[in-house]
Length: 371
Image (tube, rainbow, N blue to C red; front, side, top):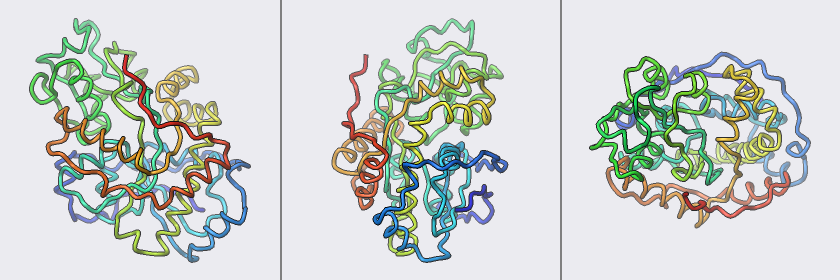
């Protein structure tokens, strides 16, 4: 399988208005990576089931994959799970879930990786053509999300944010989490604080300039900002859920569907490799890519947690509906939606089989009680 980074050339304008109302995010195209490729024995099995799955992909099939911040591409390359695929996969790096949604809807990519908030928020804006076909989750972790305030601002608690400015990227997991944190403390993002909507890449620089009182940031940004005071994190406010989305129409194409099925299997294996090789992941992602020290990277990685892939079944559907209802309760979502028509469990057997092969024991998808 060839790995490359693609640009946003050719992204058409269809449905752009809906996504632009979610956020003004733009594609972020990074330079080519030089990470070494290593084979992971557990994920390179050529048993009969894998061979039969791969054989369904017609030669010459192409698959364009939307990644975010190399979350997929780094473990994919390090583990070597893409070796031997019968299709050509191009992995493009995007800045935020809203940009991934835009590329999916326009047809610029075939499958995309987003967190738990973008799909419900998009559905609330009228998007109907996307469906989740695989999901991983890590309930109970901070998720690598932190609500920080300016040093010497006098802001000590979330309640102190009343009337203050808070920067966040709309239509994203950070939008969901900051809204939930405020809601849990009797505040509304729409009424009690002054929400400043920015693209994901603009939040940290805006906070660094002192233009806002607070911001919801990612773990790697915490150290680059000089470790500002943290007044809350994502623990209990997210499920650590990330999903693979495709257009419903793509699943009517036998060649593309077969390629997606094989890709999902490899994506599960890649994720399991990442969880089993935390130090290698920290060095590649946090040290080499983000410029943190190894100890800083370990801290951020621990805050993000691990997790596993789960079947898209009734339990996952219930969780996703709770997420959607939570977005509505916090004001991030403007109308109630039914998520059941936007999840598809046709690849559940593949996910379960790969987890078993990699020695990943099934865990209950349950959110720990919030302290």
